[in-house]
Amino acid sequence: MDAVRRAADIADVVGETVALRRAGRSLTGLCPFHHEKTPSFHVDPAKQLYYCFGCGAGGDVFKFVMEIHGVEFSDAVGLLADRYGIPRPSQRDGADAADDRRRRRMLAALEAAHSFFVETLAGPQG
Image 1: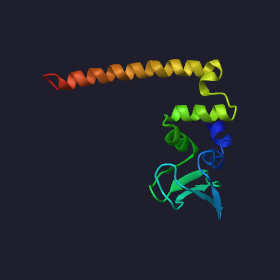
Image 2: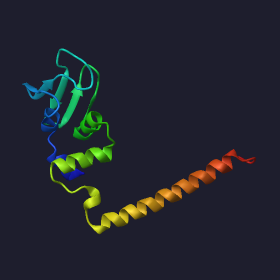
Image 3: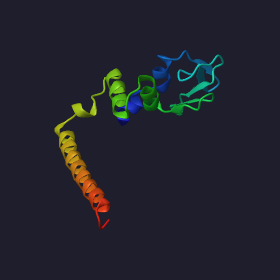
Image 4: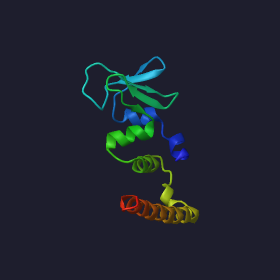
């Protein structure tokens, strides 16, 4: 994910959707998240963040892709990874696959514990 963050320039990514103009150190344009006639959408290339003073939308390049494409964080990372030719996390070495298996086992254990405690608390002695 860090490699994707370093490669994905927010001005380039936002610039595919929003016509941006330089305004001092930032870039401005019409917000893609609400209707407006006067630009209130700002991109700060130095900080790699965006913010709309009209609707309050803001975040980093991942958040922008999530909002524009209506996807979850992992999908936004994947879209940007594909765009910049960076292997997706699931395409890396076998160590990641082992981590995924361990993570799934831990999640299953947590779900079992959750079910146990819900049943216990809802029972007559809960």
